Image (cartoon, rainbow, N blue to C red; front, side, top):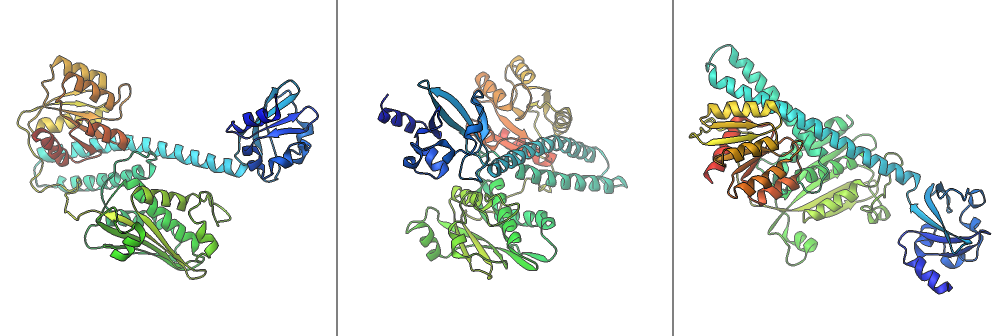
Length: 485
């Protein structure tokens, strides 16, 4: 085989490769290998392998896969695989280019991902319990006298359950790691207010976190988990920049100036209106060199505990949301991050957690099938909806629900369907229900689910979605809305 053909073959391989003879002379390498080592190919070819491979004379060639170190020093052990090539030549393939530090970062990220999934699973189960508690509480209120010594206890139980539900929702928001979460109209003022309360325990007492919310909501289109991640990363970054006493100031500008928007997005900005989230600190500030590399993945100025992923993640999320970042910073003068995001028209909206003074909406004898694997949830839903005047049947699994629906010949006016179930998932059940009845009305419920799944089902004919835990008053309105559309 000619040297030219051999070189072409090596260059076509995406992983770093080199070829070493039995007498340990390097006879070829591809650009990926040379780039990894920081050495020109011309310097490698014809040189003894010890030039870039200190351990080469101690390698047990009988092992086809092992860890070893290459120069330059400090890159850490790399995983390589050996194969014979044309008899006397050894083809060295680098399977992993992670250094020990980089591998540690990856492991740390995987551990955080695992913890996020665990937290999400726990929150899911806890939400089911809270749904049962709130449902039975609503039922007890409907059958007990409106006055008496028991009323104070019922109020205390409800307040405690709602506070627990709020904490659980925060766990869910921060544990969601999939990229398919629903992009919805979110009040950025409300999100910051909740985060500032949650994160105060992570801020040292000598650092003041100043946040003065606007008197009215300010809406942006975003995934709440992503928006929360941006806010938390900026506050934590500001905290780490302050040595000793200092202040982190968080503000929101309702409208950005037209000149600023044009400068960021051009003469024809993609959105009609923009707002700005501003996080300002009195920390050490940054020089020009640091500012230039600020959003590079894995770049960090923190000697300990820094992964260099926080601001890179912020930049990526802001761009996904159609926004931009403006950074002002000087050494020893502090830093200001200004996140400019498209805003949406201010409209008042009813919170699902707010209970209308008229109470729950009653039914008119419609038939409802509840499919949920949690006994506590389907039991309280069945009890409550029956009490509101609906005819209810329940199923403990997706398969049982399909069997009941088929036996009743699709005579149900509405199906309340849990998304996350063992065996057949909620999405599988929805698809099969539609095959039996294209016009089936389905109200989705879940304590923890992928926004991508919810979006897909709603886009294919699902009527609405409600997050566990919920109050029966809110459920009754959702049910009525599905039946009347």
